[in-house]
Structures are given as structure tokens and as C-alpha cells.
Length: 316
Image (cartoon, rainbow, N blue to C red; front, side):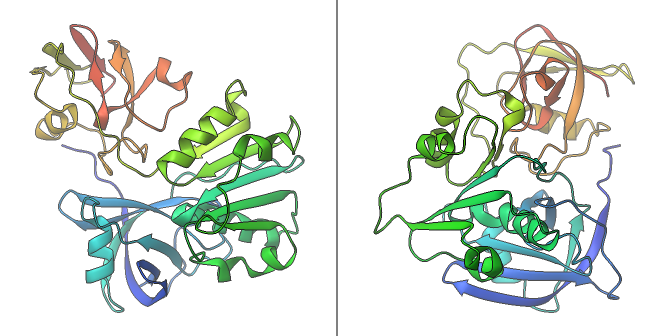
């Protein structure tokens, strides 16, 4: 059987629209118990329907353990998750959410540089609120917004203290990320979350850095290109010995779900990391936006993976 993802039943207790197209939701336990703990910048999955599971960053600080707060941008050309959140989740609606996972591993002694674009601010709101609550001021936030910023009210103390720089790119030039990072020396740790052009610019700015010094948050599902030279391969589940041939026009994730394999799935887009699995023989084709180069030597995000060889053996 497919491994179940443990969820918590929550209820929407409040909503807010700080800007058109942005919806803020407050989720609480239906009996008002404390919710499972989380790290600053952690994510949760909202289970919105069959195979409609979407990942969002928590905006509130971990000490606010009686609620989860998320901010969702309505993506007109998205895959349906944001539309469901905006149109269906009213106060009183119950929502199953996953246990929180992930989070920002800040450097407590060196400078932490947060670079956000648009709604990509969400994981940094939680992290900054936590740092402010703990009296940590070794950070700077550079927030680019295509118009007025969306949820800046949640960052009031940080903005008032001068630790946040907000740029409206409809009026000002797009910030030079390489220059920003260079201004903080070679010991700072950098984080980035935002639209794809910003993430690409950030990747160029940190080229040559050790991977422990930077972190990228991506929530856009991977668009896996069709390989015209792809060939069938045999998928083997090492723990059960079950195998099956995977054809070039089949997605590995669909095959695994059909096989009821003992691996949990969530985003099915290579960004959440829930389905990371050890591989024993391959090599796999890595299409995810989660694993580091060293992690890929033994693990694979199977929801967007393929295989370069004749066999892909998973430790499942």
C-alpha cells in the first residue's frame, strides 16, 4: 500500500485579503488544541482533494503554536490549488494539513541575507518573526515586489528597525543580487525565494559558493521535458522484489502510485521533498528542485525522476 501521509484536521478561522489576488488564511485545530510544532520557514501541505495537494510556507513564528498562517497568491495559470484556496476555503471550512516539515537553518553568528520576490516572502516572514522574538538581529531582508508589498504588516518591527529593504520594481530598478551579496562579505549565508527569473539570478550570484552557504526555496512544479531518446527501463522495488517495466511515455510517479508503492507523495512536482527515496541502482535522472548534489548520489525525488540505464532499483 502507498504510505499514508499523516495529517491534522484544521478549520479555517479567519481570512484576509491584504491585496487583490493575495489571501491570508488562519488555520486552527477544530478543538483549539496546540498544533504540531514547526521550525521557522517550515511548510505544510494542504489536502484540497484527490491528488490536489499543495505546499505553502507557514508565515507565523513557531511560538504561535495555536495556529498556522499561510498566504496564497491566486495563480491564474496555475494547476488549481490556489484557485481552490481562494474560492473554496471560507471561515468554518475544514482542511486536512500535513505535519510541518523543513525550515530555515539560519547562522546564529554570521549575517543572514534573505532575498524575496513577491509572495516568495512567506518563508522569511516566519523566520524573521522568530528571530525578532529571540532578539536576533543578524539578518537583512531584500524584498522586491511588483507593486505594493503584500503582507508587510507582519514584518512591522523588522521594517521599523531598518532591517528590511523593499523595492517596488514598477518604479525602481530590479536589485543587483550579486552586488547585494558582495556587500555582506564572504561569510554571510544567503536565502532566496521568489519567481523563476529571481531564482536564476540568485543562482548566478552564488555560483562558486559552497552549498552550505546558500539555500533556495522553490514552489513552482518542475516541467519535465520529454526526452525523445528515452527508452523503457525496469523499475525494481528492492524490499518487495516487485518489478515493472516503465515505458518512455509513462511518468514514474504514476507507475509508483499504480503499484501502491510504500512511498508517500504530495506535490508530484519535485519541490516538496516528501517522496525522497534511496536509490540502489540506476542511475536516476534527477529533475527535482530539492536535493543537493551530494544527496543525489544516494537519494532521488521519485515524483519527477527518470532513469538513464536499463534498471532503476529503489530502496522501497
